Image 1 (cartoon, one colour):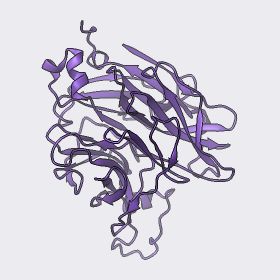
Image 2: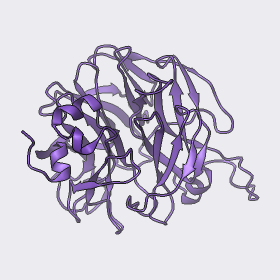
Image 3: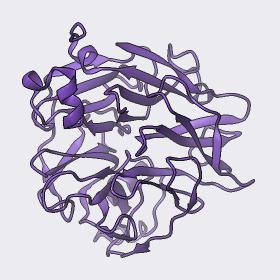
Length: 373
């Protein structure tokens, strides 16, 4: 099973960026993104936080809801996470963080206590994948978000690079580090892990069945490699690991998406004997060229150590930009990604690539198998 269609339509002054999609406690699907106003650029003068909700596993969608909007205000999208223990959805975003106790129908302010860790402070989740709730080991129920921290006083001899300019490739490579934010009290108090992998950010992470956390980050270099790390203590600290050669990275990188396929749903597919229980999915632009194209979903049966299966969401020459994944309660995989309005071709300019599409598929499609009966 595979289908795809546009769910956020670029039009007039609305340009959609930075997707984040999660499954709410009741099974509703919440799709968030930025609505950049009058300009698609990163340094746009006005930016809103918007959402759509689906009650049928992503088949149909309700009206667009504006969560944060104010004339002249520039509010960017961060990470969402579902807390199954409390029934809340927490959303990090500009304009003040938000929380919902009714599966995204209404939202109130979320103001956690922040434990600032030097250097760099707490860090931010803009451009990163949604957070996760740990399911295994002694840190069960901990919330963990992938994040990026800017460390400017880092020992470089050049005294002119004290500040940080996100438009500077040099600053991204020298001052951006990956990190993780975590909470053991359901978002009341937030802490930060160590900083690692200089020159990375906009990351994604997933829990392995043994409780380890696998971290996969965008890299701002031209070596065409994504950077990975591993935590064996529930996200308190991460150690850098070897690059995964099969996972391609564009020059200066791109956001990617990463999720665990839930064990309970895996058993219902009839594929658990074949795939095991440590099934991880990863999606990003899989191209050696200069364009964000050829979106590919990969499947790992060993906790992201290796990648045994893959299938393409878009062909070469078809735009596939930032993405985010979730698994619906019926086992359908939902991949939200930025693309052109027609979902075909490459954009002629930056303002032609700002719609959000949704691809719906199952494990059989990734593995290119007939439906299991």
